[in-house]
Length: 290
Ligand code: NAD
Image 1 (cartoon, rainbow, N blue to C red):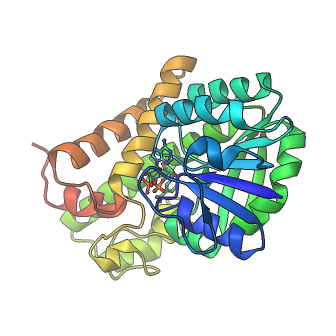
Image 2: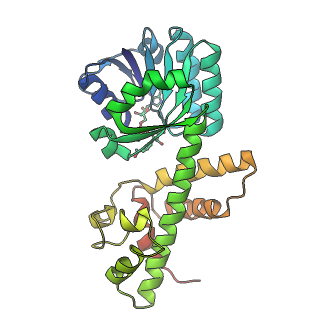
Image 3: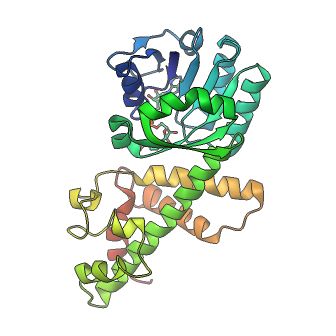
């Protein structure tokens, strides 16, 4: 199987490298980054797409995805699959899939969870929307780049699953951080707080696996001065995508809206960019109610 790979950034480069290391012929293109080891350089997006059985995109946002798709879809061979692994808005995912399907191609939206570490180790989780045939074509690639791929339904449903998951994650992280900050002010030791909550009904992934309090629970970015990890600005991106989707679908998401606004303040007004999303805890720690 020949693969074209567009977008060789923090995530795309290790994913493309893992495919090449598994023996696939990979031709990559990025407007800035050089191809990683084992990946051949294409001179343009269309060049990477010509003759490929699967073209993978790992791009910053939906607008760039739409413009890249307009360039590469006409260059792709009939029956080939366009596999977008970027995190983008549901509308862009569905529009790009419609363009590809109209041109006789397969199309999948397959955003990932697992971050740069997961991309590097080949342990990503893929949430996939699109046709069953295209999913079967891409399955061996998911197995190399990741450890799990869930077929969530038709086009756009992978993005829907991703933003719903990350809306829960953002809301839960804020709840965990504000509870720790309250516990501090009430004189409750953080380790005791962890010991109780992690085994009680307030437990969650953010408390149990990614505890925002330094020195408490398993090792997490909090133990490394909140270096990401999962940066606050990426959480803000995903929360904005969930709010845009909620607006389009007339879904009432007050907690998601509140989390989006808190991460906006943190990133844009409080120097939170470049810090892990769990750095909400030192943010709350330094504040009162006023
Ligand atoms: P990144 O900015 O490091 O990489 C994106 C790459 O796309 C850049 O190298 C950029 O030069 C390239 N690019 C932009 N326009 C292009 C074009 N027209 N043609 C070819 N290449 C082009 O971003 P990233 O961290 O690799 O994230 C990629 C996607 O994965 C995003 O949608 C992000 O939300 C998602 N994601 C990231 C993480 C993470 O932890 N970094 C985790 C999950 C999902």
